[in-house]
Image 1: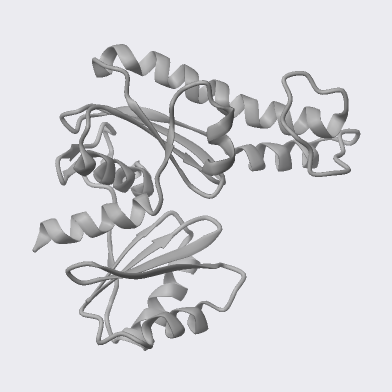
Image 2: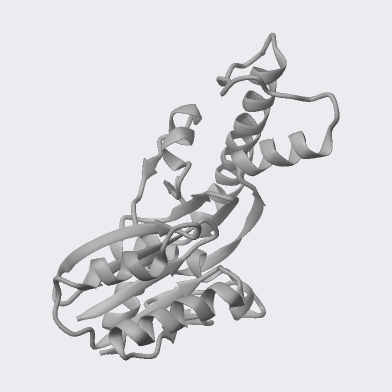
Length: 245
Protein backbone atom coordinates (compact mmCIF):
# COMPACT_ATOMS: atom_id res chain seq x y z
CA UNK A 1 0.00 0.00 0.00
CA UNK A 2 1.19 3.52 -0.83
CA UNK A 3 0.65 6.67 1.19
CA UNK A 4 0.65 9.76 -1.02
CA UNK A 5 1.07 13.21 0.53
CA UNK A 6 0.48 16.67 -0.94
CA UNK A 7 1.94 19.39 1.30
CA UNK A 8 0.27 22.64 0.25
CA UNK A 9 0.39 26.16 1.60
CA UNK A 10 -2.72 25.80 3.78
CA UNK A 11 -3.18 22.07 4.34
CA UNK A 12 -1.84 18.55 3.95
CA UNK A 13 -3.79 16.27 1.63
CA UNK A 14 -3.29 12.51 1.61
CA UNK A 15 -4.40 9.40 -0.24
CA UNK A 16 -3.94 5.67 0.25
CA UNK A 17 -3.63 3.48 -2.84
CA UNK A 18 -2.77 -0.06 -3.80
CA UNK A 19 -4.11 -1.31 -7.11
CA UNK A 20 -6.94 1.19 -6.60
CA UNK A 21 -7.74 4.39 -4.72
CA UNK A 22 -8.55 3.34 -1.15
CA UNK A 23 -9.08 6.54 0.85
CA UNK A 24 -8.25 10.22 0.91
CA UNK A 25 -8.51 13.24 3.15
CA UNK A 26 -7.01 16.55 4.22
CA UNK A 27 -5.92 18.30 7.40
CA UNK A 28 -5.05 21.95 7.95
CA UNK A 29 -1.63 22.99 9.18
CA UNK A 30 -3.30 24.49 12.26
CA UNK A 31 -4.82 21.11 13.16
CA UNK A 32 -3.38 17.99 14.83
CA UNK A 33 -1.49 16.33 11.98
CA UNK A 34 -0.32 13.40 14.06
CA UNK A 35 -3.83 12.47 15.19
CA UNK A 36 -5.34 12.98 11.73
CA UNK A 37 -2.80 10.74 9.96
CA UNK A 38 -2.95 8.12 12.71
CA UNK A 39 -6.73 7.94 12.34
CA UNK A 40 -6.45 7.76 8.54
CA UNK A 41 -3.94 4.90 8.62
CA UNK A 42 -5.53 2.86 11.42
CA UNK A 43 -8.00 0.80 9.30
CA UNK A 44 -5.41 -0.19 6.69
CA UNK A 45 -2.53 -2.69 6.49
CA UNK A 46 1.14 -1.76 6.53
CA UNK A 47 2.28 1.07 4.28
CA UNK A 48 5.05 -0.07 1.93
CA UNK A 49 5.88 3.26 0.31
CA UNK A 50 5.36 6.92 1.19
CA UNK A 51 5.67 9.53 -1.55
CA UNK A 52 5.26 13.25 -1.06
CA UNK A 53 5.09 16.42 -3.10
CA UNK A 54 5.60 19.68 -1.25
CA UNK A 55 5.36 23.42 -1.71
CA UNK A 56 5.53 23.87 2.08
CA UNK A 57 8.54 25.12 4.03
CA UNK A 58 11.32 22.95 5.44
CA UNK A 59 9.94 22.96 8.99
CA UNK A 60 6.61 21.52 7.84
CA UNK A 61 8.36 18.93 5.70
CA UNK A 62 10.43 17.89 8.74
CA UNK A 63 7.30 17.67 10.90
CA UNK A 64 5.50 15.45 8.39
CA UNK A 65 8.60 13.27 7.91
CA UNK A 66 8.83 12.68 11.67
CA UNK A 67 5.14 11.79 11.94
CA UNK A 68 5.33 9.40 8.98
CA UNK A 69 8.41 7.68 10.38
CA UNK A 70 6.66 7.20 13.72
CA UNK A 71 3.41 5.91 12.19
CA UNK A 72 4.70 3.97 9.18
CA UNK A 73 8.36 3.25 9.99
CA UNK A 74 9.08 4.49 6.47
CA UNK A 75 11.14 7.41 5.15
CA UNK A 76 9.38 9.73 2.72
CA UNK A 77 10.32 9.63 -0.95
CA UNK A 78 10.18 13.36 -1.70
CA UNK A 79 9.40 14.06 -5.34
CA UNK A 80 10.73 17.28 -6.89
CA UNK A 81 10.05 18.50 -10.42
CA UNK A 82 12.27 16.68 -12.95
CA UNK A 83 13.18 17.64 -16.50
CA UNK A 84 10.75 14.98 -17.72
CA UNK A 85 8.57 12.20 -16.33
CA UNK A 86 5.42 10.34 -17.30
CA UNK A 87 5.47 11.86 -20.78
CA UNK A 88 5.59 15.50 -19.55
CA UNK A 89 8.61 17.66 -20.48
CA UNK A 90 9.32 20.55 -18.12
CA UNK A 91 9.88 23.94 -19.80
CA UNK A 92 12.03 25.34 -16.99
CA UNK A 93 15.77 25.68 -17.62
CA UNK A 94 16.19 24.72 -13.95
CA UNK A 95 13.51 22.00 -13.74
CA UNK A 96 13.54 21.68 -9.95
CA UNK A 97 12.42 25.32 -9.61
CA UNK A 98 9.01 24.52 -11.12
CA UNK A 99 6.56 23.87 -8.30
CA UNK A 100 6.07 20.12 -8.07
CA UNK A 101 2.33 20.68 -7.64
CA UNK A 102 2.25 22.25 -11.09
CA UNK A 103 4.30 19.43 -12.61
CA UNK A 104 2.08 16.74 -11.11
CA UNK A 105 -1.09 18.49 -12.28
CA UNK A 106 0.35 18.31 -15.79
CA UNK A 107 1.18 14.61 -15.35
CA UNK A 108 -2.44 13.92 -14.37
CA UNK A 109 -3.81 15.96 -17.30
CA UNK A 110 -1.46 14.36 -19.83
CA UNK A 111 -2.42 10.87 -18.67
CA UNK A 112 -6.08 11.77 -19.13
CA UNK A 113 -5.38 12.74 -22.76
CA UNK A 114 -7.82 14.64 -24.92
CA UNK A 115 -5.56 17.25 -26.50
CA UNK A 116 -3.80 20.33 -25.12
CA UNK A 117 -4.54 21.71 -21.66
CA UNK A 118 -4.26 24.86 -19.64
CA UNK A 119 -3.93 23.97 -15.96
CA UNK A 120 -4.83 26.57 -13.37
CA UNK A 121 -4.25 26.19 -9.64
CA UNK A 122 -6.46 28.49 -7.58
CA UNK A 123 -5.24 28.68 -4.02
CA UNK A 124 -2.90 30.95 -2.10
CA UNK A 125 -1.17 31.42 -5.44
CA UNK A 126 -2.79 31.48 -8.87
CA UNK A 127 -0.68 29.28 -11.16
CA UNK A 128 -1.16 28.80 -14.90
CA UNK A 129 0.54 26.29 -17.19
CA UNK A 130 0.13 25.44 -20.87
CA UNK A 131 0.58 21.78 -21.82
CA UNK A 132 0.70 20.58 -25.42
CA UNK A 133 -0.88 17.32 -26.55
CA UNK A 134 2.55 15.68 -26.81
CA UNK A 135 3.37 16.50 -23.18
CA UNK A 136 5.49 19.58 -23.90
CA UNK A 137 5.16 22.22 -21.20
CA UNK A 138 5.12 25.67 -22.78
CA UNK A 139 5.68 27.53 -19.50
CA UNK A 140 3.34 29.39 -17.22
CA UNK A 141 2.62 32.24 -14.83
CA UNK A 142 2.29 32.77 -11.09
CA UNK A 143 0.18 35.47 -9.45
CA UNK A 144 -1.49 35.95 -6.07
CA UNK A 145 -4.72 33.99 -5.69
CA UNK A 146 -7.92 36.05 -5.35
CA UNK A 147 -8.08 35.67 -1.58
CA UNK A 148 -4.40 36.63 -1.18
CA UNK A 149 -5.02 39.68 -3.40
CA UNK A 150 -7.78 40.75 -1.02
CA UNK A 151 -5.68 40.17 2.09
CA UNK A 152 -2.71 42.03 0.65
CA UNK A 153 -4.83 45.00 -0.42
CA UNK A 154 -6.47 45.29 2.99
CA UNK A 155 -3.18 44.98 4.89
CA UNK A 156 -1.43 47.59 2.72
CA UNK A 157 -4.11 50.31 2.79
CA UNK A 158 -5.48 52.45 5.60
CA UNK A 159 -8.85 53.39 4.13
CA UNK A 160 -9.90 50.28 2.23
CA UNK A 161 -11.97 48.10 4.54
CA UNK A 162 -14.55 45.34 4.06
CA UNK A 163 -17.58 45.04 6.32
CA UNK A 164 -19.07 41.87 4.79
CA UNK A 165 -18.17 38.93 2.56
CA UNK A 166 -18.91 40.87 -0.63
CA UNK A 167 -20.05 39.67 -4.03
CA UNK A 168 -18.64 39.86 -7.53
CA UNK A 169 -20.11 42.54 -9.79
CA UNK A 170 -18.93 44.15 -13.02
CA UNK A 171 -19.27 47.61 -11.44
CA UNK A 172 -19.58 47.74 -7.66
CA UNK A 173 -21.24 50.58 -5.74
CA UNK A 174 -19.55 49.91 -2.39
CA UNK A 175 -16.01 49.21 -1.19
CA UNK A 176 -16.59 45.64 -0.05
CA UNK A 177 -17.97 44.51 -3.41
CA UNK A 178 -15.37 46.58 -5.25
CA UNK A 179 -12.50 44.77 -3.50
CA UNK A 180 -14.02 41.31 -3.99
CA UNK A 181 -14.94 42.00 -7.60
CA UNK A 182 -11.58 43.52 -8.48
CA UNK A 183 -9.59 40.62 -7.09
CA UNK A 184 -11.70 37.79 -8.55
CA UNK A 185 -12.13 39.45 -11.94
CA UNK A 186 -8.39 40.15 -12.10
CA UNK A 187 -7.87 36.40 -11.81
CA UNK A 188 -10.49 35.79 -14.51
CA UNK A 189 -8.83 38.29 -16.86
CA UNK A 190 -5.39 36.71 -16.40
CA UNK A 191 -6.72 33.20 -17.06
CA UNK A 192 -8.64 34.22 -20.17
CA UNK A 193 -5.66 36.17 -21.55
CA UNK A 194 -3.34 33.21 -20.88
CA UNK A 195 -5.66 30.80 -22.67
CA UNK A 196 -5.99 33.18 -25.62
CA UNK A 197 -2.24 33.71 -25.90
CA UNK A 198 -1.49 29.98 -25.58
CA UNK A 199 -4.07 28.66 -28.05
CA UNK A 200 -2.07 29.38 -31.23
CA UNK A 201 1.07 27.63 -30.02
CA UNK A 202 -0.94 24.72 -28.62
CA UNK A 203 -2.51 24.22 -32.05
CA UNK A 204 -6.08 23.95 -30.78
CA UNK A 205 -8.29 25.42 -28.07
CA UNK A 206 -7.08 23.81 -24.84
CA UNK A 207 -9.14 22.08 -22.21
CA UNK A 208 -9.17 24.50 -19.28
CA UNK A 209 -8.83 22.70 -15.94
CA UNK A 210 -8.95 24.43 -12.57
CA UNK A 211 -7.93 22.88 -9.27
CA UNK A 212 -7.36 24.10 -5.74
CA UNK A 213 -9.47 25.35 -2.88
CA UNK A 214 -10.97 28.32 -4.70
CA UNK A 215 -11.47 26.70 -8.12
CA UNK A 216 -15.20 26.07 -7.67
CA UNK A 217 -15.80 29.74 -6.91
CA UNK A 218 -13.83 30.96 -9.93
CA UNK A 219 -15.25 28.69 -12.65
CA UNK A 220 -18.68 30.41 -12.91
CA UNK A 221 -16.99 33.78 -13.47
CA UNK A 222 -15.15 32.63 -16.60
CA UNK A 223 -16.51 33.20 -20.09
CA UNK A 224 -14.61 30.11 -21.31
CA UNK A 225 -15.64 26.48 -20.83
CA UNK A 226 -13.79 25.13 -17.81
CA UNK A 227 -13.84 22.15 -15.52
CA UNK A 228 -12.75 21.59 -11.93
CA UNK A 229 -10.33 18.73 -11.32
CA UNK A 230 -9.94 17.25 -7.85
CA UNK A 231 -6.78 15.85 -6.27
CA UNK A 232 -4.70 16.59 -9.36
CA UNK A 233 -1.44 16.58 -7.40
CA UNK A 234 -2.18 13.28 -5.67
CA UNK A 235 -3.33 11.67 -8.92
CA UNK A 236 -0.15 12.84 -10.65
CA UNK A 237 1.92 11.49 -7.76
CA UNK A 238 0.16 8.12 -8.03
CA UNK A 239 0.90 7.97 -11.76
CA UNK A 240 4.55 8.80 -11.18
CA UNK A 241 4.80 6.11 -8.51
CA UNK A 242 3.21 3.55 -10.86
CA UNK A 243 5.62 4.51 -13.65
CA UNK A 244 8.55 3.66 -11.38
CA UNK A 245 7.38 0.09 -10.81
